[in-house]
Length: 304
Image (tube, rainbow, N blue to C red; front, side, top):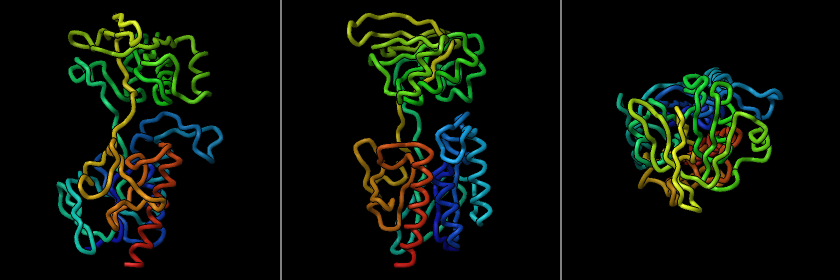
């Protein structure tokens, strides 16, 4: 059966697109390979989403979005999308469980954490190396951990880790943070946080689990060992855009290029959220992208 819209990805952008598409009476299917909510669902507390003066738990906010989309009639199916094929006036979306036909596609696959690509990182995944403080922070109660990075995500997760860890080192390659001022101020006031400036990780060391990191000062070249029990990596993200390689235009980093209507260079294919090229990646911008993409997809169907 031909769908009007297939949304790939169930984070804030995908769920928002689903709300708008289903509410517009478009036959809408959302395909998500894991749990809905995306990275936002692994964020313990979101305090800058409008309408929640006291903030909201990430899982709770995403659960509400999903319930809202379902109420309007959006169907959600768990499945891993393997390929998107452009037909003459439609698309075939191939999954491990079967194929779907649709008039339009909204790519809302988000982004994934960028790796350090240093010795020991892969060896200690799940044994001290993590990309999610909310998921793994409780395992480091009364221990020492290092957070690698200097942006909002790194600093916010470092503050979250102080609930459990005895000491949190923020290791940053520069001598100042990139995080927003209010986030920086909170971190500087936190007595459990110590900053290691102008240093990069050269190796993550240990035997059965993480025991420390080897650092190099980018200015002096001096090397030092920092004894920690855990390493949390927050040095940015890479877009999950492999599905549209050769189908839609992307920038040099792999982010999908769209116009203001979220339309890609491939007619009928739209992109929303963290997977597309833009200046700000937040829940509020993701849901806006999703809404615009859904409305644009509806207009595309009308005019086809």
